[in-house]
Length: 138
Image (cartoon, rainbow, N blue to C red; front, side, top):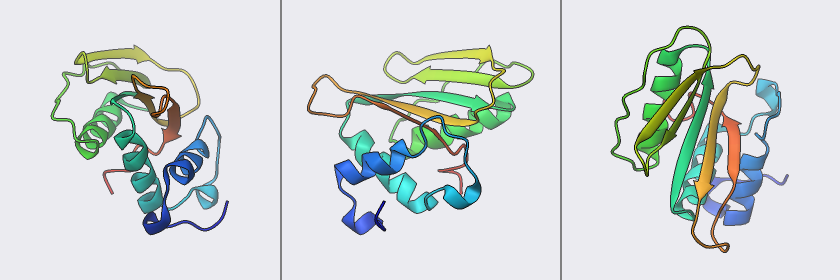
């Protein structure tokens, strides 16, 4: 992929940045810069009606922190009541219904899945991730 920065980011190039994270195990050397990933996600989210978040984390505290940071960055005022659970977890939150689901997670992936939902085919209807848990907390 050519060198990108937030000043020349288009919707297509933003999606290309985010598609690099689709269920791939990667070393930190292969990860695009956090600022570029944040810009790409915000641009893609602006082209969807709302986003559903799924978080795979080692602890409920880690998942809740990531959920809160992503929701704030995406412009949501929701403060979900996240049930507690021991061990690795999967947390799914739909800001449209304000519904939060928590389940044990035994998979190896860690990160945030952002599922963009749009009423129109011309807008973004796609899931991106696993994006870094700490993307918006750094």
